[in-house]
Image (cartoon, rainbow, N blue to C red; front, side):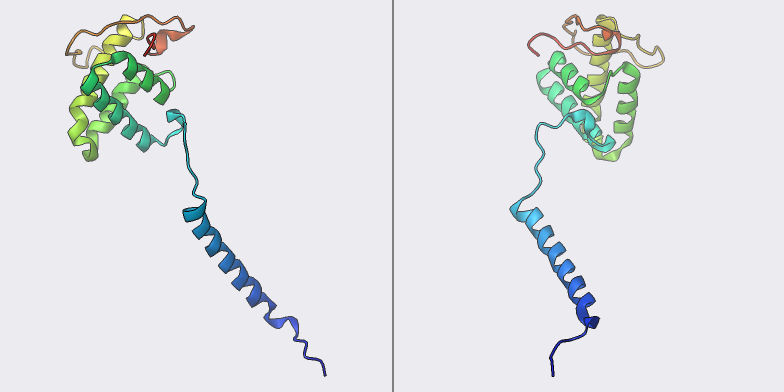
Length: 157
């Protein structure tokens, strides 16, 4: 008499093995070998994370008033930004209660970028919107082709 079992229970072993394998792989991916992102292009962020990043740019601008650096960061965040894109983003941020504390710094940054865009030859501001306020902005020309719709990046910024 042979003690060989028929193949009836093999599906249960396969299912158990796969389940244990997935659980171990998940634990290993979270603890031993977690996925780490670095040097990510801000333009590849999800729209909600772009708003978070823009708020961070605005908060940094409110602390150092470096319009060139802020313009460079906004250029990295949005592809060929113009004042309309910035006003839409400003509206979305001001409409969200999570960003209540940063609404003023976002408004200030967008107004300064509006002046900056006009100074470097970008699209004109919407006259129905309030004019830019605050300190005068230092203007740096850009020599990139087709830059009339882009925010110029100053040398050394």
